[in-house]
Image (cartoon, rainbow, N blue to C red):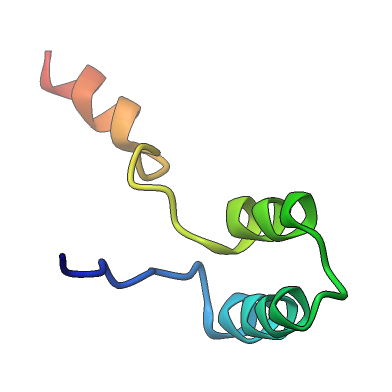
Length: 60
């Protein structure tokens, strides 16, 4: 099985996420904390880019 590459909101979010991920692996950050940082730092594939609704509305 192939891992999908994670996409971060920015280089800063990637650095923060990597630090917390290392803390999680070391046992100093729990699963809930890691999940919170995933939501904060990673780009969600289910979120439309801002302005997408306006473009759709203008096409009508």
